Image 1 (cartoon, rainbow, N blue to C red):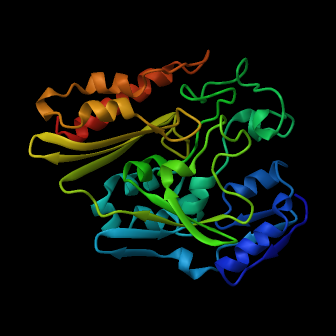
Image 2 (cartoon, rainbow, N blue to C red; image 1 turned 120 degrees about the vertical axis):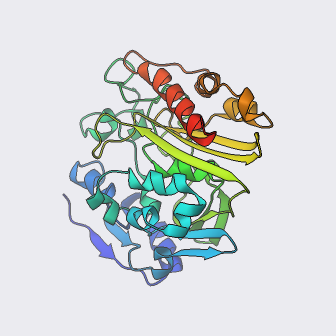
Length: 326
């Protein structure tokens, strides 16, 4: 690991200014569970790390009139064990509780979980200069692709590794980004970008930007939610596929539904065709198996990951069985 300067800014304004001064050689750090592994593997050689751990406003979860504001430096353990959040949005607490291991959850932060880099073997290996690292080849196409994308690959077939991102998007979250001009907000779904938009990035952050807060609206009436994750081991594994599902019911009719898949695309994947067929439909008329098939319609698996098509579809079916009381 190469030497670097470690700076503790006094405010978000100072943090953004420091990040913007030399963006090529400066990185923010909070829990550091992903960043430090990149440093150890030789993928990054920053000259300065800007610590966000000392910025107290980013370490709180606030609750006002049914809506939540989560600081980016809140740990996954805090999210998993917040009673009000678990009652309002069970899928978010569930997603946080199945991320990595207890030790990592105690350190890893919300902002870091949303901004973590891909887990593709070729990206993580220092000897492969793949497309994601500015090279000219995606080695996974003809190589090891068991855990990679079946939807939306566009030349690079990473999958977004966050558990929290699909759950937060299903809940209708927005994100506040602090830059040199101050705070700006956008839908969390619009925060993530795939290889078609930015090959070497997974989000819209520009020099000087950092994730500051995530906002959750007050839950819709009679809403239910669930997060399901399939992984090879019950330990710290990332999702082979996951689903975050939320539905608002009016007696026996689904009024609103969101289904977001993880582990199958470069960004959290909204299954819009599945959502559309659920909206306005009586529970007794819903075929969860068919909805699961719609959720992965258009999938284009590679040699070793076709299993994800069936797996993701079955997770959607199980999530609907859970939400609709089957």
